[in-house]
Image 1: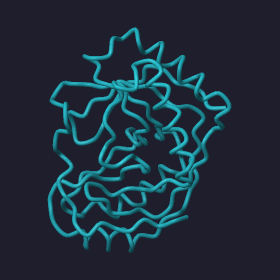
Image 2: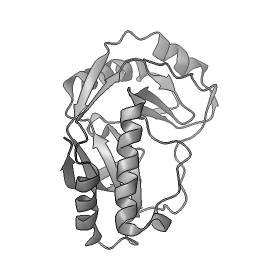
Image 3: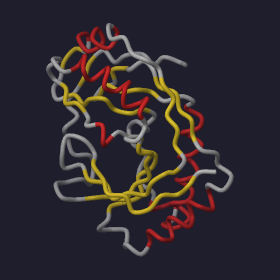
Length: 210
């Protein structure tokens, strides 16, 4: 597994992204991982070590996920379009095999402590197909702008302050953890909100892989 470099500095994650405000929700495609026992164990090992590290909010296990592709705000995308989005995704994902993603060493990112997923190529392929499916329904000109960083990881904790990352790097590096593989046989279309310290959602539909 290719190891990502740690960030030297962290910044506060709690800021509104363009277009977001309290109470606003969006449609998004994501991979939920709360039901994976091996991954839950790995996350627990890290979060136990992080419990006394100031400046970070731990992500509850129930909200573990990889955000694959934003779709659009729910006050701009009519609810009836979700059926069309699901149909387009089924067509674009025909023949796409279920995912088996490996996780091991956590990394300090500018706003989070995260578990990178491997192979990255599988996630890129999935994202490109779902981005194309979204464009099929809403039009390419309505696709959300590319984010600063495309999700390729599961977040363990979000930074609540600004400063050097040295203590977080030391904590992660000094924690003994068991590598694991998480399997995903479906991708979820969800209604996402960001009112709290981590993303939360309600599932609209699931599209099987394979």
